[in-house]
Amino acid sequence: MKIIYGCLFCMSVHLSLYAQNELSDFHSQDVVTSFFSLIIDERYDQLVIKADFDAFRANRMKDMSHDAVLEFSNAQGKTNTWNVTIEPRGNFRRSVCVDMPPIRITFPKETLREKGFPENYRKYRLVTHCLDRPESQQTVLKEYWAYKLYNEITPQSFRVHLMKVNYFNTANNSKEQQFAFLIEDNDELEDRLNGKMKDLWGMTKDQLQESSYQNMVLFQYMIGNADWSIPEYRNLRFIYPKGSEKAIVVPYDFDCSGFVNAFYARPNVNAGQRQVKQRVVMSKMSAEGLAVVAEKFRYLASKPWSFEDASHLTAASQQEMKSYLADFVKLLRKDKQLQRLFLEK
Image (cartoon, rainbow, N blue to C red; front, side):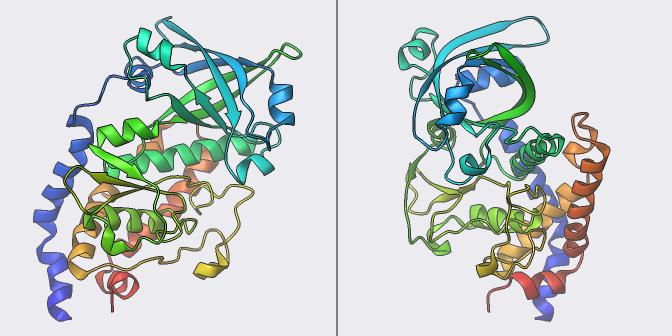
């Protein structure tokens, strides 16, 4: 074991360069032109959704589509208007999000084709504020930054885009403004990673690409998320790159993590959690794999966290997020403790 412990230190310089190179891939790879890329590139950060939200809320437990109009705008005065359909989504969130359940937005194929966008990139998830409470806004923002942190770790992740959303209820002409964020379409993620997404239950870690698996496992531990499972196919996507027999694993839904700590989150007692903020190890890895992924996370933790200059986060939220991650950063400096937690026996 002394040799293994030493390896974590002697490889640090080489792995730091590896980490920097891999993390730069997210920005250097070719991104297919799409509606989602458009709103990111041109910074469409304001959105108006016009719909009958009385009917939408009343039928939130049904898979019912509602007509809606989306009006995107940016600081330069550019606007982009779309006729779409919206429907409530999520198995659990829609039951507790009585004020604004999460939304699935579906764009018409014909309109996408007319505007020169791929017609299969048409379904987007909008993560909403859930309840009309100030803390619900901060919950949305924390989950957004969880996605952004994983973007920093690997390009094998869902892209997200934060917006101020004005919900215009056509039933009574009322308005409310809240933060929300869009999540990249599944088909676009597939094409960006040059692979095919498959719905598979009963998978094992040995059927996943090693680096992808290691990134996911350590990230979930970093944010204190126990709401995922490889064999149960929960809150994960499996994408098989062309020519590969092993899948990339892409996590999503981080609201029940200790980092986000949504009001409705409950500990995963089956995984040994006693409280939502408790970190638990959900899966193990090899010594070599742990050495590589730990150094990558050390490199990220050596810089200021990306959310530290986010004006939309309250000072209390920022401090809570930094304090939660600080405990993980301390662990990264303790090779022996890391190995006790994560090494396969």
